[in-house]
Length: 610
Ligand code: M6R
Image (tube, rainbow, N blue to C red; front, side, top):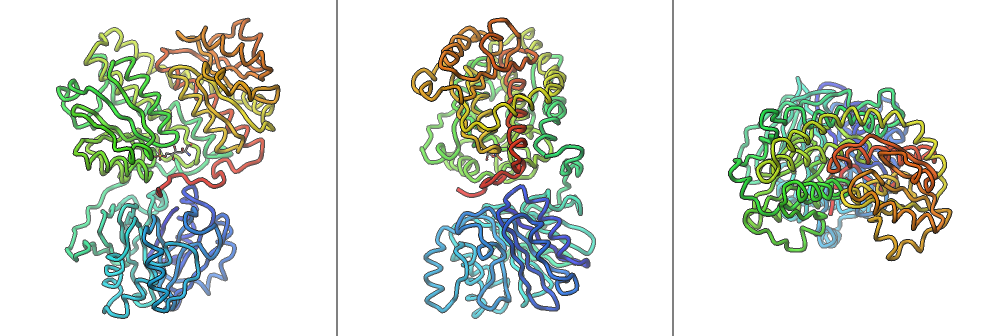
């Protein structure tokens, strides 16, 4: 879901449409916009991509104006229909809202408003906001106060922008739990839920805090709290490379982002290595070394791909620093009343920094009085701001819905954390040096793997019509198998499962026949012989084996349909290499199936709802 708004001296709709296109990756089942044209509010909506909305707009001279809002939707309440698209208007059609978040008590509010005579058009929770403001408008002098009153009645989360004929030169922006960012420029102001939408216009932004309202006009902004206390805006500069939001020579963002990984991984570790002491430095943790030494337990909490990075972190930290680590899915962690003893370090990991479940887990940790650190990509995101410290992965904008470069950057940061914690404990300088030295070689080794792109496309062609696939790995490569399977299923819609290789014989082996591709990670670490035995077991049941390995041996050639041979490294760093062919394989399968790789069905780049 994405919000945009413009107020200034230029024609607003083309700016809003362009900004919506930049946000399409956040949700793309329908979109809409509202503009004040000749003093009247006009609303346009369309299902499908933003380009459909753009095509449906009337001639420019009948929809021009200087104040507009827009929204791209990922359906939560109510199906992906035109009626359910934002903006949602009140009964009079003179006021409309775009909203990210969830209104928990919307059914109750809707019933009350219906009793008062309000007519609802959509099935959404958002529409109650417009009618509530309309209701309060009857008893208050101005729209701003009506919004304040309406928000008092609302339970839930929102990033909200209101446009109204009553106050046609201004936009009203509010947040509680869902980001709202104001972009500041000369004689024009922007509003968005994601800075990507507006960086082509301005790099000067204000991150609205929860329970704040910004009223923006072409001449500036006025920020107040809900009890009308004035807030001085804190203007930050966004250091965002605009080229990152173009596909360049690549067919899809996902492919571009896969190929960026040598650079993004290097960006993650470049300034964070202490060569002299053979350790890592992560200043953003805001913890003195003496405190870090006391850590007895670590929790790594995340969703989706970020959770797979957390699982790899668990294997690495436990092996290198001998500290017990619990990797947890945020949506489970937040509700299971986690036990957080003293001397526990909690990290939440999130590319977007906005994932609702991860944010809720963060808040739960804080409610228990514990410190929580973040590993995030998006600078200034809610998670980055609410954590007590942490580290940015510096992967740059990730547009493809399937996370690739953020994953390897998260693993890079977790590697640095493992080195840092391990050097304080049992890792000696020579071992520390070895890790650092190998980490520095990862980018060039990934370049080597990327050269196999064509070969991997051919392998993808051989499995593109499958209906199921199994991904196997053991030890630290088990989460890599999970990640490979997630990549395949989310963009190719082929059902895929990741499994610990030895566990297959306890059930899933029953699924295997000659139609089931099995993608196995069999790199030459301490578990290689064990994995090989497991692969023979599945081969004996007719599986078509695609094996990722570091040495092309006759024994592997004998059982593999396809072998992908990649460089080796220390076994704790091997996931950084092993995941690359799996990303490419998933990409090519989806592309060969002519699917929308960057914007797969039913998904959104960041899931800002429970
Ligand atoms: O922004 P986050 O890292 O918090 O997102 C977590 C997941 O929603 C995300 O990794 C998702 O699983 C991706 N689509 C996977 O490619």
